[in-house]
Image (cartoon, rainbow, N blue to C red; front, top):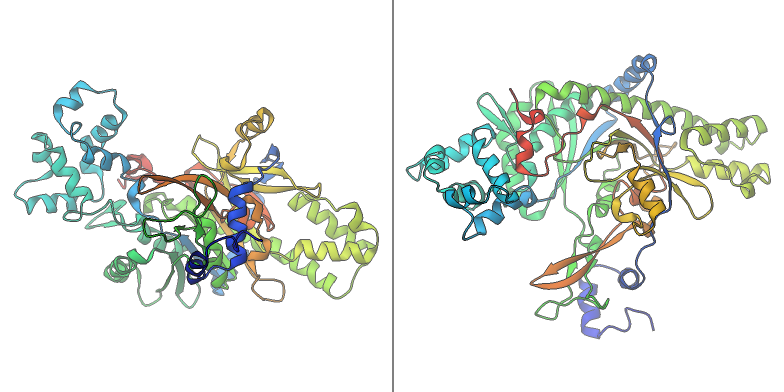
Length: 521
């Protein structure tokens, strides 16, 4: 009897109503029991060995190559933006919920408390935040103002005005709608900053700028309300915004499990499902049927005064991808026509080995026909060019050479959770990484015939991971699908290009907005 058949008929029916197949549920429950294999990292990718530093003399050609594609309307932007901003305000929310910490006396008596230090910095520099004017307006309606409540030590009043529903409600908004940067007369949200970026580096000759945000259903109304409020700032006679949104697919949710690896049930006996992580967005990306698609996290943006470098490298990696695509499509057309002469097979083999760091298996080279087929299959897959920046101790994954099962190494983006840290060798290799993945990339999603790829065919299902969460005070195990830019793209052709560190400016906590990079002076 399989895992699904062992469940009660009532539970089976509840799962079917979710739209997830029996086979998928069985596979997920087996994953909880068996776990995921860790990756075997051989060495970190470095400059000249897996990471490219594009020579200056190549920049003009690559930029012009991209300009032509942009002009033709081949490019668009995809921004994962479904996350709430609750993590940004986690410390402030914790302080607001505390009965003893929000007082001048406690601040003075416990200066070493990390939450106190964080909150004090927030209060001391409150006027520097882009939402300051809105916050002051909320308090003025209550007969006070920001500096008065701080002077009086009414920290609870101020944090409540920042986080709660009867104030700015920043603790419940999506990160896309939090005011990040101050400009004369208005503040910009990350949604707006991404629109500004998209206009600059993707607007075609006809002026239709296509940008796609993934959002949560509960934020849809607020998202479109804000978009319509600000649309006139960015549209004109030569620029039209084609803003699209989508939700994470319900069928990509994963079933939660108990510590004993049985389906986790809520108080009503219903199975609990959880979003499958950002890897679930592979389905959304595929549905775009886009040609050249840029992907970038919602919180990695800067004000206009610092965008010049970002624009430059966006266009540079776009040109680099197109130059690679030109050669790949040429080779695929040769192979598709039946050309398996040694001179072309050797040329393509050398290209694959030098560009994608993958060697031809001995078995694939036994006959010209097998050789040609291996080359065709290896080239005929999605292509991505990913920005890498120098590792400055930011949390997240990085570029590594990974030992694959068939014996050939591959270039991958590897997350901390995919490593066996009990193995001292693996731990040392992972910690020796020189570069970091800022999730800033451009992808080619169509084959040499112009047909969109089935992206699910190119993911590695063994690269998810299991985490421990809490549900109504009870511990559960959650299953994360292969990450969008690591396991979900494991069998893509990948190239890593170094960019300056100042192209990566994430906002993980509200106080990150106090960094120089986010002050629009």
